[in-house]
Amino acid sequence: MASTNVRNEMICCICLNLYTDPVTLICGHNFCRECIANVLNADYRCPQCRANFGQRPVLQRNITLNNIADHLRSREGSEILCMYCIETSMVASKRCLLCEVSLCDNHVAVHSTSPEHILIEPTISFSKRTCSRHNKTFLYYCTEDAECLCASCMLAEKHHGHQIHLLYVAYRQQKENLKTIQGHAIREEEIEKRIQYLQALLKCITEKAASIVDKVSLQFKDLRMKQDCVESSVLNEIGKKQEQVSMPVINLINQLDIKKDSLSKKLATIQELEQMLDPLLYLQAHKDDLMGVSDQNLNETEASLYEDLYEVLSEDLSEELIGTVNSDIVTIMSDLQKGYCVQEASGITLDVNTAANDVHISDDLTTATWSNVNQCRLENPQRFAILGVLGTSGFSKTRLYWNVEVSKEGGWRVGMAYASISRKGKYSLIGNNKKSWGLRSFNKHYSVKHDQKEIPLACRPSCYKVRIHLDYTAGLLSFYELGDSMMRHLYTYNATFTEALYPVIVVWANAWVKVLN
Image (cartoon, rainbow, N blue to C red; front, top):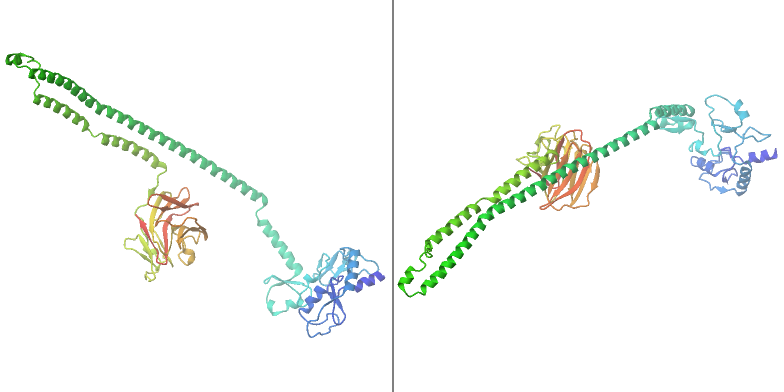
């Protein structure tokens, strides 16, 4: 009995539990530090004797009470005892929020069963269940403010006209809502099925890509074989032509050698005749050897041989060989174009009806220039509000590229966009939405942007020509920088296009962009 009385003296009158870090007020009453701190936040009065302190009192820690409370708590463990059991200490099984008491099973059975008496699991700390302003238990719930209320809070002006329920009613409604949401939520099995489907799709994409790679490799292997055949054929033809041209030259050389030998013999005979002094013998000697030794006969023979050689050499060997090579190369390129060559889009012009009033369009409809002078064009739903302009024609189911020349100064964006792109505000700019993909240059830096996600590029502008390359079917949109000697790849987007894509340009800060046709 004495033990029970001691324990009752160690109960905080606010939370009705054993003291936790007890403190003493000037009036001599003791409370849990957290409990009395919440009360003093609203009123500088003792909740037990109602003594008015005028100002917030200093809380003095009561070491003796703290030690006794710790001793009782260690002896009782974490068990919360029934507050109605006097003779014997029974463990509480429930706590009533309205009465703020802990009850054992026997006392719960005889406790009021009205809805206001909400029973919860027993707890040591009750401070979180009381209103810090009014020091009253939370019994109600405001659905509009999603806030728990005590009886005083419910009457406050802040919640006037709001839909307010008892805690247990709001609790049950929230539980029902959770069940409804859970019923509509995707189950784990369905998620697993979706994962399996996506994995199968990924495998299919990988296999399809591998198949295309094999096909491309075979086609290029075939093209290399055809190229080797052309090279071999041309080299053989050159050998034949060389032999054809060389034979007359060799024959002419042989004839000249024979003529040379004949002339040598005749010159020797002439020298012998020059040494003869007898006129009769001179005239009768070797007259047969002197026949046909005249200079005119010799010159005519040589002239005939050189004429034959000129006729052979005059055949245009290079033209014939080049014609053969060109014919075979045309065949190879035709095969290549069937699957892989991309055509340049010709005749791209800018649609003035879409141009913003701060963008000047050239007379030939190929150049967009930022202007600080309002162009005063008529309003229409297709016109951009700021900085942009679309091309007149869209592209789908095709492979193509188009080139632009850009200014050294200012800022610009070029790319492709759906015709359904927004025309108002900053979200109409290239890359600031899901319906456009663009390359951006500003302050000598490149970046690409789509769906408001901007990716800075490591490379800096090195020239002032850009290529936009579209493979609609494959879902590829690439950007290149066109130098004088080479083309540098900047970035490639991989997407699934669902509408025709139109060229789109954005310019600001004295920038300009010209479409090169």
